Length: 122
Image (cartoon, rainbow, N blue to C red; front, top):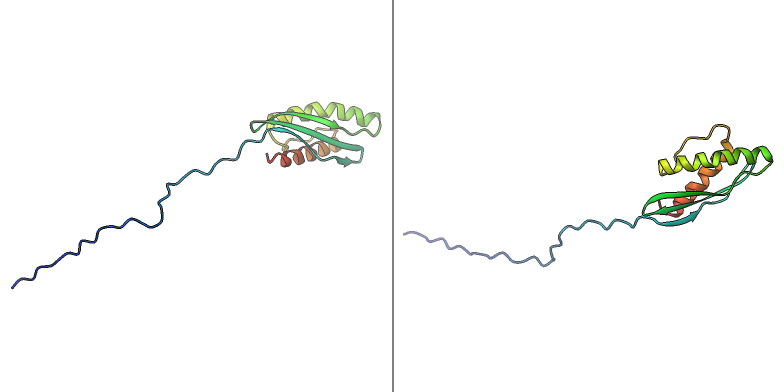
């Protein structure tokens, strides 16, 4: 006598937890605005810069203060500032080379710039 196997056709039941489709994490908004760096005190005076960022791109760097201890210091800073500005705009960061003969100005400029970029979360 044959035995008939009975299948207990258990139907698949929907999961209790909703199935979430993988979603991409929302990208943070690109920083925009003008941010002042900290005042950096150097051997030849204070240095401070401001950076303007538009849609995640550095569009301007302005020296708010440059070393001012004596005429030679002012001259060096006035020569170094446009070079540093140009280099920062090209590099889009504070990671640029020292300006020869303007070590203190360069150090203060880039330190202040990095503080401004940190404030912008750039």
